[in-house]
Length: 311
Image 1 (cartoon, rainbow, N blue to C red):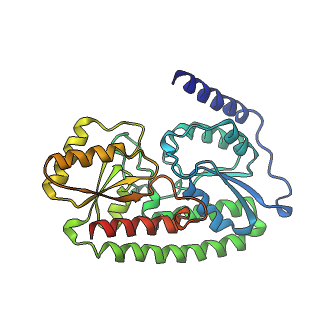
Image 2 (cartoon, rainbow, N blue to C red):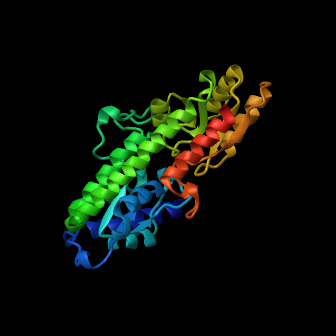
Image 3 (tube, rainbow, N blue to C red):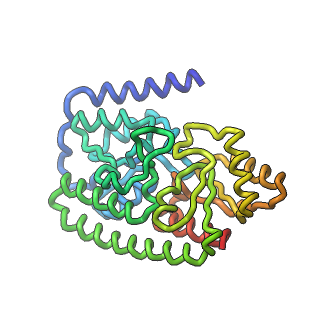
């Protein structure tokens, strides 16, 4: 572990040193080629693809099953960031170990933007674990992800003003699709009886989902997976599940299932046979080429899985 930490620190130090040197020159010949975009999570990559269309070549650093809270950049990631014309990341400390890197890149002149940066703080949920911080999982409220979409369109147009009309059109088309998605989520959640609208997952990633769509949300871990769940947290949560006879709890694709399985066993020891309701995509999307490999498909999968288990 010590060696891994030293390697990680070394990589970040190299990038910070590079970013602290001369300001990055403006991208050349944008009109003659696609814009190279590097992103962090799959959700951010997907929104850039939808807004940028044929004008962008998007490279995502974090694939299926990757936990952004714990992610460490590799030397290959360093090169991809350095070669990008523009960088988008989620922000709000989701990519906790990379935040300083992004700040240095921005200061050096590299166009680097958090898609959550212009969301009204009044719409954000405060972090329980970290004072002065916000819950970063904004994509689970589709209306907030629409704000992220607008941010991406704005910054692409600033970088490539000759294609502004294209970005605006793609943005508007995608916002309409997100309107339809928002309506779908609301309608489906309403089919769950009120007393059964309780979502229990490995970590507290679904706070915005619960706030927007009327679902009580409980996570075994906090909003970040950087802290481990305690034995007391397992016992407290299992007692709540048994007392309220909650039908199902859920694993997440980017979090090892062992903790939720431990909760299931603790509930069963209390005489209630709670089921694993399925796998949800929280901090990472599904595989490329599958419906869950897109933001809209991921949200639909989550909603259908939740409704199927709790209805």
